[in-house]
Length: 295
Image 1 (cartoon, rainbow, N blue to C red):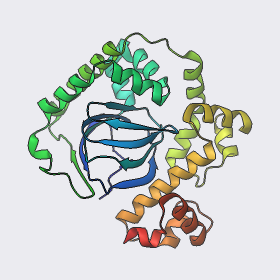
Image 2: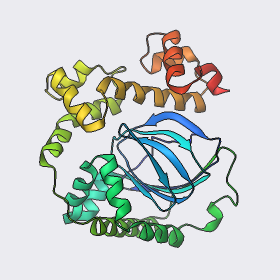
Image 3: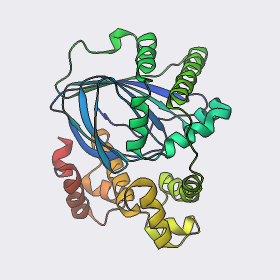
């Protein structure tokens, strides 16, 4: 099972998905995720370490975690058996639904991950998040006991009216979060920098160039390579080179799980020089060679 998903297939017809996630103590996932969707994670039980935006933090029952679009997150280490609920939303549709409050969401997402989570978990909004789960998610979606490794159950609501009703509740939950968080000063400079590098992220997401070099990404944004790198490091806590490599490795790792493609085929598909280069790089990041990881 692909526990840490990156392709949520969000659209106007499906603006969000729910995931019920449970992890045992032996579960670790050394890889990183990055994608356009926004995550709201509600910690119900247990605790784990997770890396978000280049910094590592411990989260426990009662905490909430808000992950911004394209923010690197992953490298999970369980400290206790974990039970969490994930709401994944298309950010453009969330902003549209929030209307005039969208600027406050933007200001919250522009905070560094540590500042954002500290603010949210001081605000007292976690109780409203927990009540959201209790109200909307049937108890049978959860395993009675924590799994040895991991369990994820995705909830996709096929009925349009039911889905719309849930999306209204998600909007109300975010309004509650923004209200409890208090007023935030918008970081206009950081927001402008984020807009300037969006063309590079769209090009990366398109998959038309693998690997996507720093020079090509900077060119897409009409920036010099050196300035592009400075901006990217400031926004995402790592160089574009490191980010782009993690992006390709994550998708190659998913293909290892779900397809019968050979290591050589995956190395070609995801822009590595050859099978040996892919294997060395994969082992460095995931702790085992791709041929053994699949088994």
